[in-house]
Length: 206
Ligand SMILES: *[C@@H]1O[C@H](CO)[C@@H](O)[C@H](O)[C@H]1NC(C)=O
Image 1 (cartoon, protein in one colour):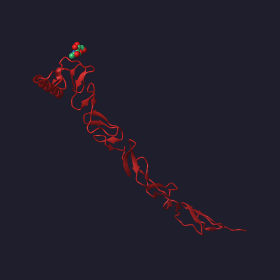
Image 2 (cartoon, protein in one colour):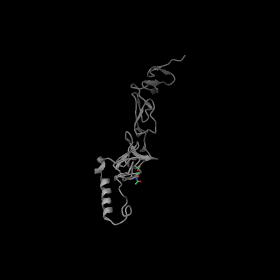
Image 3 (spheres, rainbow, N blue to C red):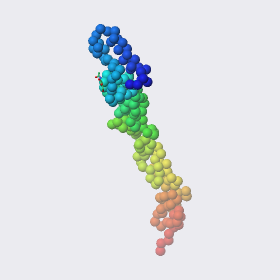
């Protein structure tokens, strides 16, 4: 213990205890919790402001414990597997935050869901109709066909030329004639006996 440490609160506490021991008639080492031996040596050395009061006995500063005062303790305790770095300061595992690691944090957030701890792992639990690690993907139960994309629950965004809830309806800018059917953008499927882009031609049979 160097001179630099003499101002430590722990030493003051030790000296107070020494003084009361000196005033007391009780035998040394009995009336007080410890007797401070200025020549004491502690191996390993006392850390975190702890003082060596007897050979291999450290008196730790508030907030530390262990043989050489090497362990910090945190009150309240670090939650969710956090480790106490120094008194009142927890280091939190990934997915947790807050002073005591009590808060669950999902990286990137949960867009349409809630961040919860599942078996110690932060995870987004999505509202119905949403999926993905951040609940960022909408679910279209009807499916989006012909290159459509699901942009909101049950809502497809369709490429040009397609319409309908599942982008399943082709659009022919000019309608098909003679009972022909629009089967893809601007493409008619004609009934027998008709042809041409719009089924406008009647085929001649011999
Ligand atoms: C403490 O240890 C030192 C050497 O490591 C020794 O000389 C001394 O007598 C010890 N003190 C007591 C009170 O046992």
